[in-house]
Image 1 (tube, protein in one colour):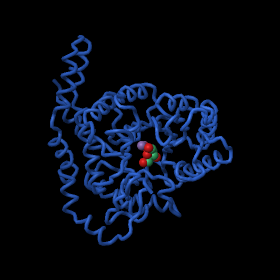
Image 2 (cartoon, protein in one colour):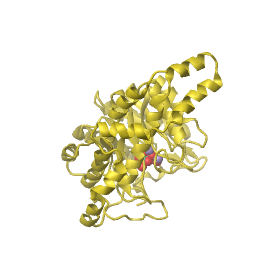
Image 3 (cartoon, protein in one colour):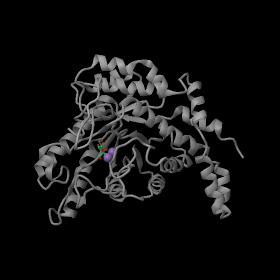
Image 4 (cartoon, helix red, strand yellow):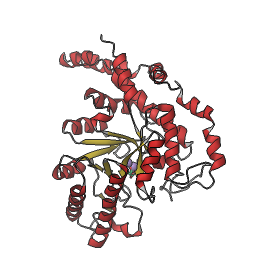
Length: 389
Ligand code: PSV
Ligand code: MN
Ligand code: MN
């Protein structure tokens, strides 16, 4: 049996997960936003908080922006600020769901004027990518209908295809369009991009730089997400992840909290193809809010959860797995996976951190730093993440 520990450590030391800027602002449900003390007042302060997560984990090197939640005067300046803090601006997430104009949809809206407005926003997002050096445009559309007969299902697909083609044509050669799907909500009868198949079909028509994003919270209960991962990887169309946990639907709770075994199974498919590291081009991102828990520790915990699932996936004895699969040894193959899953990888990760000059316990190190008290004292009147406004 080969010792996979050195390989696992090498990969873990280079792993990087993107944080969502919106994780650091106040957030909640449609019932209540519980404001926390010391939350950022602007995108600059969101980046400062994100930099704390990077500082204590060493595995969170970039921050996704959401436009217009993170609107600033000068995006190049924001990117410089990020670099000074030792983080980078990652995915640019568009928002075509919070204007009154979008009641009947955005890019699929029956009125061409509204579609135009949505396209202009998406093109502005590409301008922001140019200014920040970001390579990925992430599109999620709240478009859909609530009632049978409300609009033409096929007509809406035509409008969507037209808009996507215009945006894709605007991208530079080094930039990608990442299309996210979601089963339902805010629309409940039809959703215009409800599943990976729809996203994949649109991406195929657009070209190789259009790829699918899997938000782990956006599926029906019981959906085998690792199958989707394996399929899209094989087709070269897996663009990235929005990691989070769902107990019910689009909960946006901490990744690895509801079902760490599912996260392991997903990471196993990725480890098999050796696409864990940033060079793979897969954008690994958290898409979460911390409504009742403190935000910076919530992000640190989430990064650690991804690291633990990754470590277990990297420890899977691939030779033994393949041999058992070839031999038709069902129980043996399953046991190989379970052995890795049941390994306590926390000591291994503590070693990886120590070797990078980090504290082996990121949560304790952050708590001891006094940063939380400082921001509580310094910042008054923090801002909303965007959700629940
Ligand atoms: C929609 O539910 C979504 O997952 C999309 O990625 C949005 O942009 C994001 O949430 C905002 O949290
Ligand atoms: Mn998402
Ligand atoms: Mn979501």
